[in-house]
Amino acid sequence: MDGDEEFFDAVTGFDSDSSSGEPSEAGPRAPGPADADAGKSNGVGQAEERPPQENGVQKHRTRLPAPTFTRSDFSLWGILKKCVGLELSKITMPVAFNEPLSFLQRLTEYMEHTALVRRAARQPRALERMQCVAAFAVSAVASQWERTGKPFNPLLGETYELIREDLGFRFISEQVSHHPPVSAFHAEGLRQDFRFHGSIYPKLKFWGKSVEAEPRGTITLELLRQEEAYTWTNPTCCVHNIIIGKLWIEQYGTVEILNHRTGDRCVLHFKPCGLFGKELHRVEGYIQDKNKKKLFVIYGKWTECLWGVEPEAYESFRRQGRRGEPPGAAQPDSRAERADGDAGDAGDAVPEAPETVQVIPGSKLLWRVNSRPPNSAQMYNFTSFTVTLNELQPGMERTLAPTDCRLRPDIRSMENGDMDLASQEKERLEEKQREARRERDKGDTEWQTRWFRRGRNPHTGAPDWLYAGGYFERDFSGCPDIY
Image (cartoon, rainbow, N blue to C red; front, top):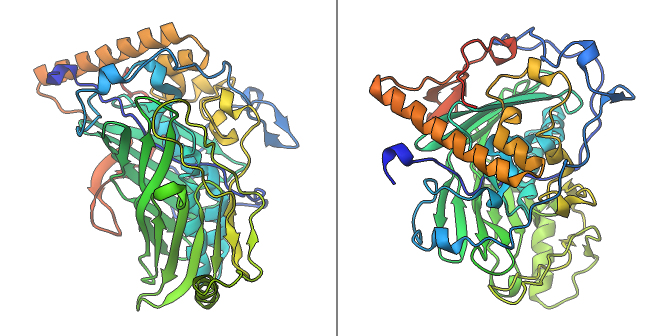
């Protein structure tokens, strides 16, 4: 595959699920620091263009136009058999293995849990704020559970915006690099209480039976009123039984969240499955101060819930377990979900996760996943929040950038159930992108990003893509024609 034929079609970009939310806060927005978009309209159209509302809250769709497309007639082996141990971002995948979202929309799934961030911004103590931030970081990978379809890789210059007044944020992302594929995003609270930003480059490898996505790039959350910044990276995600058998997902690795103002650190261990599935989905960790004194212990499952407890209570509970004593008043979390252990006739068996999370006496609930819609399995296992991401509401075409994912024809065709058209449009867009690259090479011109600029993360000093501002002024006259 030569340079002209390269098209980065990421196999993953796994990213979030539901969290226990809070009602939208009422009252006037507090004035915040001036920025490039300050004072501008959210751009949701005139009053007559707004979608239906119920009790003053905008209504969103609850189902996709067409059900999930079956992949039973397709095999990845012909594509992947020569790729063992290789990086996968240069491999073009059939549309049948996609889900009808762009990776930029997958990134937006972080924002399903904005209530946790807003809760953090209201806490008076740094320890309580870190608890909320840790819950946000864990909840942000929860929707990856059973999401075995890959998102469409964004085209260079593709964008996605989302404004949710009910959840209190607005979000903008852009595909800023094609080789390697890099997606940059920036979100801000409508009450000027937080900023959330980062640039993501997932490193993907095929290992014969599984695909592993190693996250690259730093995620930054800023609580503006406290003048605090938190940074971390995501755990590694692995999809098993790629060739044959029932697909299943695990997350593993260590996530460290650093409060750059206080020096407090939260260390979270996403446990690998292990023998007999004993550790499947489990997360354990602790919060420590700058002197490495443990202040709080965190435990749970990234698919279900997260709890926290004082270190003394946690150690006492562990000592009881080592002595073989009954675990006191520890109670199973009755809302915990059970993994499906039926792997079919071939492939590695899907580990059967322990049925509950044992709650240590005195524990504090930090987060619990929301139930998915009853028809989620027929909608690519989307959450209720995810179902809304590609919704094209009346009047949106007049306010969106022409590069927005919602206007991308291959994704729209797949969502509508027309797989043949989706495949044709995907091939057309790939060739159009290659041709645009050849034209730039002829003219010896470099691609210019529109909404993000290369820079340094203000808190870590590492290379990053930073929001340049101006998107919500809605001057899209210079946007490229990518569709």
